[in-house]
Amino acid sequence: MNQRYLLALVLTAIVIVITPLVFSKGTRPTIPVDSAQLRVGNTQTSVVAETAVQTAPLLESQAIKTPVLVGDTLRARSPRAQYLFSNAGGAPVAVTLDSYPSRRPGSQHKSAELIAGDDRLVRYTLVTPRDTIALDTVQLARAEGGAGTVEYSGVVNGAPLRISYAIPSTAKDDYLLHVNVSLGGAPENSSLHIQLAKQLFSNEPDTSDDLGHLAISYRPARGSVESVGYSKLDTVERRVEQGPLNWVGIRNKYFLIAVRGTSSPFSGLSILGVPKTGRAVSHAATVVALPLKGGTATFDIYSGPQDFERLQQLGGDLDQVNPYAGWFHGVVQPVAAVVMRVLLWMKRSTHLNYGWVLVLFGVAIRLLLWPLNQSAMRTSMKMQRLQPSLQALQKKHSDDPQKQQEAIMKLYKEHDMSPLSPLMGCLPMLLPMPVLFALYFVFNNTIEFRGVSFLWLPDISLRDPYFITPLLMGASMYLMSWIGMRNAPPNPQAKMMSYMMPVMLTALFFNFASGLNLYYAVQNLAAIPQQWLLAQERGKNPPPETATVSSGRRKRTA
Image (cartoon, rainbow, N blue to C red):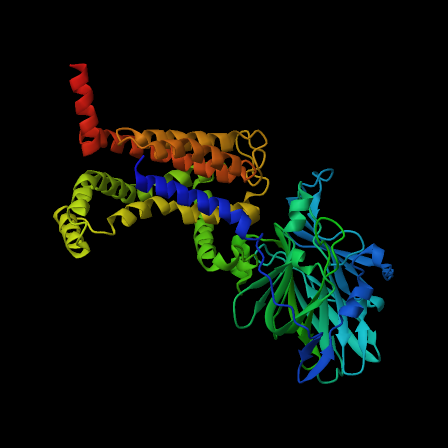
């Protein structure tokens, strides 16, 4: 194994090892703000976080009583989801996703539910210069609406209130409720405060891992998507983000509840966490303020999967609701987006299982990089042949660095090379790394791979229960290294690394997604023919050191 290939393997290991250690699970911390107020219009009104907590207790140990839901509930169905509405506040309180089965132990035959217990999908609070009214304490009447709509009406402090929902009727708008709230005679600078659910109910077999992905994401009107994990909310300190904000959502590993303003952006966001009582923070109060312009506010509620193409169609950077890779986000996210588009296109074009799609994708990446790798490896062989001449020049001009440099540059020019040739020889070997790096996050957060079985693998988004794929990955890596060292000059360090690297990466990949292991193993296997051909080429024209050793052996044999 030549030094450049060894360097590529070492850098690969560094990237893979650092990835899960340095970057959190798709969250970036926001800066706490001491202010406990959101600005609405031209005045300041206190955030209804206290009201929100009173109407939506975060933990039973806080001994805050939950208002009892009164009145009837209404169930409405869209093509892929069911919504449950309550007369108390006229708000959707629960949602069930018919297209996504629960994988939680004991609930495998049920549809995924995003809300559990006494939690609610959303809660509304009307804030005027004179009053603050939690609507879930107000009984509203169901009103006569048009086809595909759910409407509630009532009187709040003498003012007529009407809330209407347009239920999705097509797959394009599925999981999206269009909401209109109107308050007759609303004073100027009034606003509607919307509190999202305290948490998303886990539908996954590993509930602790799902809790670890809980986060609040939001999109400022100016800037990129921001995210704060529930793990950062192990405090009673309130965080406030001033608007305008295009959308705000809470998410776990695969699902999302988000609200976005349609007539105007949100004027602010308040987040109130609780001290951690277990292994992870599982509850938080997330409240957004939406100005009532002319007594009216319109917005959308999305409650569904983090489906890549669906969120892209909705626009507004909702497809980046999970801005993973931390400070490396700007590099990883574009690569991940390209990888997802390619994988989805391959899936639609071939109609194959995602496991076979990954196999084809791994082979395709290696074939695309074949010319670059070929050039890099031949450059490496040239460098090996030049080493005796370089060492001789360094020794000859050791007392004159300028002459040494001129002589080395002349030697490079005679062989159509440059001082950058060693670096350029490594670069093609590292090109697959951004794809592998992006796939690490893709498998951790992409619902398209959720529950996909392949051969003996029950779920390619989870680790291999039999650890076959990581062992196959390690074995293929060792075989590729062993072939790469054939006919190369003896190098004890390279030989040692050829044993250590596969063992280290196999141990590291044991708990990684089996699909990621599958992809990496296929990459290694697809690279073996090229390694073998170049090893044969090296044997026909060996470096000077190899030729000397072979000559000595022939003499001893004679």
